[in-house]
Structures are given as C-alpha cells and as structure tokens.
Length: 69
View 1: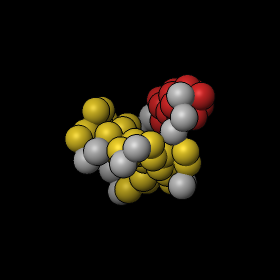
View 2: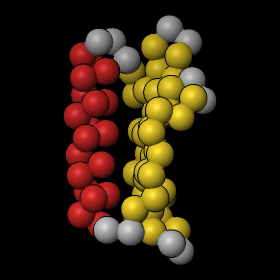
View 3: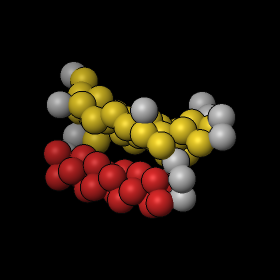
C-alpha cells in the first residue's frame, strides 16, 4: 500500500507520501524538498491516522489555491 499526493502553487511543491517497506511504512511530508515530518510506522492504525491527517491538510491547501498534480 502506498499513498502519494503532490500539490503545487506558484512554483512551490507540497508532497505527502506513505511507502510500505520491509520494516513498516515510511511516512513523509515535504515542502520544496524540505522534510516537514518523517516517521517509520510499524502499526497500520497509526499509518491510517497519518493518511487521514495528510488528506485533511491537502484539502486545506486546495482551499488556499494549491493544485494537485
């Protein structure tokens, strides 16, 4: 299971990613290649919560004019 969203506005990029690996899930949020948060999760329920938070943050960014691409 992976989750990726990439939003742009005025030359800036905001990215959310969840990638499954051998040791769990790598959860990451970046803006313009700067890591805002990063975690390795072994508990799927924490990953679900992170995805929900990323989705809510992306919706707020879209209301501010960010575009998913």
